Length: 360
Image 1 (cartoon, one colour):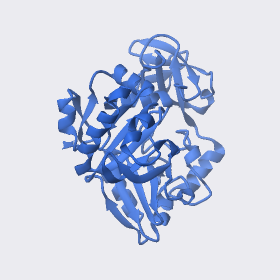
Image 2 (cartoon, rainbow, N blue to C red):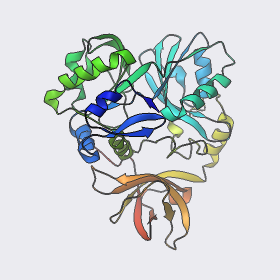
Image 3 (cartoon, one colour):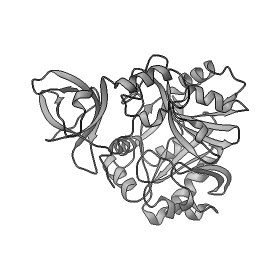
Image 4 (tube, rainbow, N blue to C red):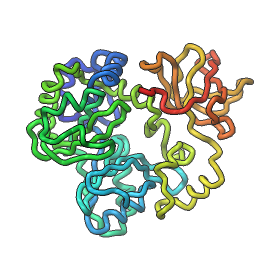
């Protein structure tokens, strides 16, 4: 089991630690609902240093990225980031990721912790260019400082105007006394804020100064459990749940990051799928009665026949009702459609809704 550079700090704060993607990670400190509300209303800090970072450099770095990713990375200018996915050759997804253009021919790819080795091997296998690849995953830490008060709370830690960094833009600059860190206006919560990339040797100093600066803003450490409820309220996909090696970006509702203006791995088959329409679609639903939907619960019709499965589900702390994502036949995916969730021996009616669940 790997530890992050902050594991000792989390334990000292009383975090409940659990194994996650091969790492010893804090799942919660005070409790999921308290932590969730902290991010929605103030500012919270996640240690997400388990994520993977690959540096791809050279004259043909973009060529390699264009080949393996579904979005059009040629649109990236220096200081911009892009959400994308890497299709496999059988209609599914190797992983979803964020691509940062750091310099003219230098890109940073941030991938899911559970897929670091798989992704590295996949990209390497496609590198018939002269692109240089470096796996920085073991050397770098990542803090997500999220919430509506994040900008105000953190401004004293940087000479840069944090409010001027637009969504999915980033700078490389000073933060918390460290000269060169990536300050990225990205996150997985839907409540604004930043993600800070730094070396493992720097993260303790940054963590301490972040909590010092945020003391008057109600800042708290946040665990992975609240990270999951926050992302689900926004309808953000989680790899291994809502997308995986068997789900296509088209059926997962990721057509917006699948650009057929270029060729990429399996692009022809995905373009054909988009043209004819996928057989199944990822939908969002709210329960009409009390209950909590969970991953792998059956979605059934009015006669009790299985028509799909739940991929993510929870009791929404913000809405006070059961919400979830799941795959159903496209014919049943229209907003307002009625479905049913099999929760143990009960069948709970639900309604297909438009994302996000949480409107802010």
